[in-house]
Image 1 (cartoon, rainbow, N blue to C red):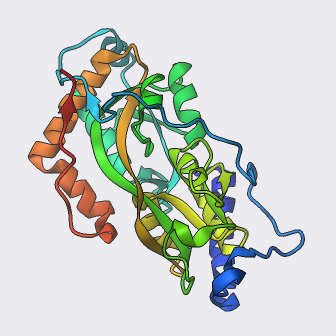
Image 2 (image 1 turned 90 degrees about the vertical axis):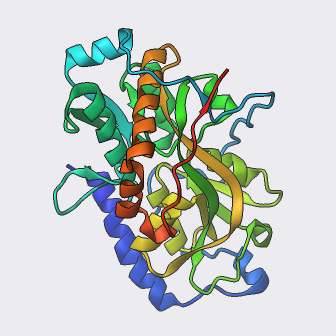
Length: 320
């Protein structure tokens, strides 16, 4: 079931969206940068304003999209999962269209949820043999390190920095960080946000990318849906995260719109513990099947058609 906190967030978003529609469009010019906040305006828990610095992306010759070559052979990690009889997967339950609690069924649904079920199908013989664990963005790496989950499929950008803490599958979605702003806002790019506050999820690469723009003030929240509430309250001037997440926010609040060119490309991969190389290879074999038999494309059409025509799946890259 959806947590009471998640329900309050979604409910608050609906109520505040109605307020925003009445309040009218954002003022133009320099007034945009004066994000007025009513005294005592409520905020979701866990907001950091400004956000604390996030570690910069590591340099070097890493190709973050390159993973291990696929195989469906077993190994220690796969044997443990099969003995248990279920796959434990860290996902989102608050990202509409990607990983969310469907109010009609009470079940998790979305693009990433469909892909996790396909991994369970090939690994355990049934798409239903999955235990989903709802994670915040900042919980993804710690949950793998502690063994709380077997894998994480939660809009996690493949970076050289994170390769030092986890192992990634091949890329399963090519995202691009963009901006979500109120309808009528004059903002068209990050260059228009000098002196303004921009929100993203705590622990995400999006926070690092926001902070890299001089004069832009990064604000972090536990979940991206919390950023939408801050935008509706005019406590931030924009939300900046991947287009796949922004499309879901815009679908929930028609008083907002996704704008601007890509700020940074964000390849998504399935993350597992570094030592679980057999699971990485197995997941890569599943992703190869999904690209080949059209399952990936069907999931895209089902959940992400508002992003545009169905693209080809991201091609796999493998290490030598």
